[in-house]
Length: 222
Image (cartoon, rainbow, N blue to C red; front, side, top):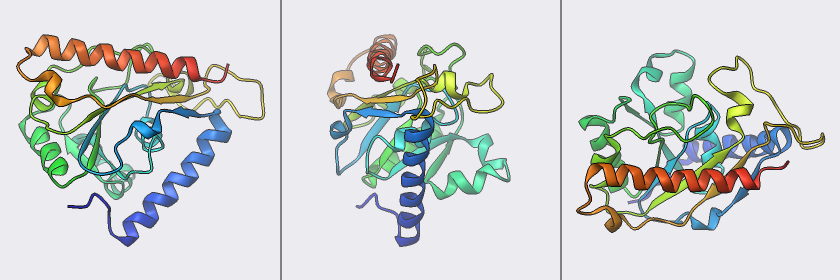
């Protein structure tokens, strides 16, 4: 089955993609690497570190594939945000990745979609990759598709949970602390995690995300 939305959905997604690409490139000096590591077809579980409210859109810029996003179910109750995230293929889940959330992801993957999740479960408090939610292991053990890690850097300075408004670093000015970068890693074979206990799996995935975050940090315009 195809992961492509209908014509109206594709036009809207493409509009958001190109306007966001322009906004982040010129407003935050965005750089990207490794985008060829994203499989072009078939189901993919995309995992990324979580620094800001910008992150879902930014990871969408790491590939021309249409992504489905995991979003906290509470966000679907917000009158302004809910229609936007629904229009961008968001999938509601609870923060701890319960049974219903896992099944929603597996259903989307079964349709051949590329699904983005943030295993930390919330935005970082200090810019580093936070401990991953234990429930992540329940999902990762059940997927049979490639798992693609994406590192995000600069977004904590740009718009952390402690900032009311974004702090730009325009491309035409000397670089500031909020220049951004994305680093897409090589796909992980899900067989890597078969038969592993929860702690080993969560620690290994955390190390991989921390490595991609470090790669993105090195890529940032400084």
